[in-house]
Length: 379
Image (cartoon, rainbow, N blue to C red; front, side, top):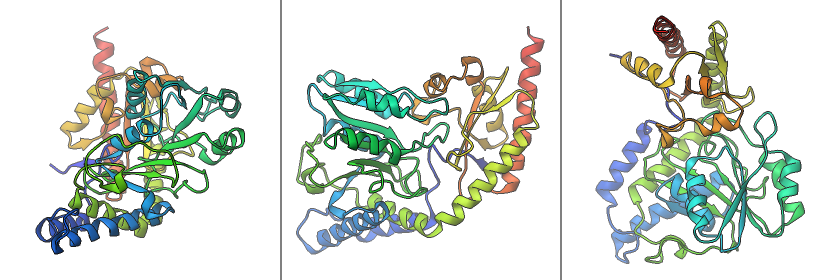
């Protein structure tokens, strides 16, 4: 059975060039990059070349890049490495679970946080942000692109409010759904910290990075050796890091074409949805072209997901990191639990075709109709 994959916001198939790069590194550059012998120096060179690649993509200096095991660790380090007892964090109610859980954990150390009010479109209310910037606020954390709906926060606009009110407040953004697909906001938004992930752009799972602006007060969370400039101990994942850099280069080379392709598919799929009864698009028109959240009335998203799976079609009901729970994001955006339960998230990738989109739309229409028929006949 031919399979169709529409869950790229959860993870992506590694690019062929990434697989080749990783295999070559495993074979030829397996040494510890901290070792002083010749093979160790070759491995270290690969890590540093990858660091340069990420720095160029992010518009920062290479010594501002810290490699991590993924986006979740990058988010945790951004918070735990900069916050102290008595500090307050401002964030949004739409953040990825890795931010919320980290902040709940840091509460035990005396850190507090406040969720900012949103405008009807889901973006942060600028007036609420300015009012919330009290003297105890140490950091503001704003997700760049939402992983469930594709909502884009206006980082530059919000950053100006923060830095004008208090230039010492740190700005962090979870860029995991944005990196590679959107221009780096680090300079324009005056960010101090920015989290990215490798497997969302065709790299390997277990690879990520955190941008830390030079001279930012940062306390290492993972003690050990002096790797990553003393900011993150532990032997570096050389094959994964090399593959991450290769994935970045692939996206740099193809970003315009892949974005335009995804935008075309998303628009076509959106148009097909309008012909269906009881459907609501929960993603903004100007959101990420790679993500579309759709809610169906009188339907259970989980049941629909498994029906699609039987036809070889992979989608999601929301964040892959919070499966089995109601979508907090949709609730905070004002969508009812009833419609939220009938939600699927479609996330597009370079390999998807218009034929795939047509097949997905037909399978969704059939699946929703069947579920509604069964539900109504059982009432």
